[in-house]
Length: 309
Ligand code: HMG
Ligand code: MG
Image (cartoon, rainbow, N blue to C red; front, side, top):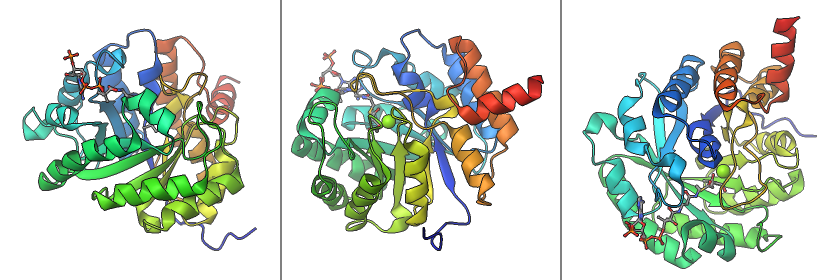
């Protein structure tokens, strides 16, 4: 094992309010979403993916996107991101006064044609053509642009995805000016060597500081996948408080790896996050209580049991 490249500090983007809640069938009131964001920033998260400006017919749970963005109490130093799949979404995200704009937008493409069609109703090539004006408009407005590369480790419709497909998508993203890309294991099927290959494919086009890992934990591999990415020098990850989530167009896929579990892993290895794990566990408990379930995090469960004892 080579630990020479382990970063000293890691930046986590909590995607719980977006990736986490988008898959919930029961309506989550705007006030609950806003309080979740508040609790995450109080716990020390400095990057929060708040909502998505997608069609409310496709993802009804995100239909209050503008209200959520207007209601969150912004904390200096915290960056707030939203998903915008097309110009209509971007224009909606910046229709409000500037104080309510996102700091960062996410365009989301796929390494799989079938998933691209199911998720955003167009081919990979068409998606890039749709993203290009979004990227231009965002960058002209001083908004940072991240790209999500779904199904980089496997697709619910096509199965295995070759690293060459990931490299191809990364090249397309780079070509239109996307500044950072996330290697996404949408359905959580990846294992460490596959993750390494997908990251190497991405690193052909992006530097190590412009790549992050976005690992769903369906098969329980996300912590192992995070560790191998760390060993490669990757220091940015998307995680979801209480392990909330999944994609509505990837049936059976569970949430992202729990932020609590990743923070426990990192702090245990002496890697800083700036996050207060106790407060984070409280944030996870808050949203889990609302959803009437236990947090989907081993570390949170252990810490809550310890508190109760
Ligand atoms: P479309 O039907 O192809 O779009 O949808 P269209 O341009 O033909 O428009 C059709 C209708 O949608 C029109 O309304 C538009 O106005 C409206 P109508 O005339 O029928 O009343 N519309 C919109 N409304 C609001 N906001 C918009 C918007 N765009 C069009 N931005 C579209 C294309 C992308 C909009 C649609 O397919 C969609 O909303 N898909 C949802 C995708 C989604 O949110 N998926 C989950 C997030 S991605 C994810 O979870 C993966 C990730 O976590 C990484 C990973 O794990 O892999 C990021
Ligand atoms: Mg996701």
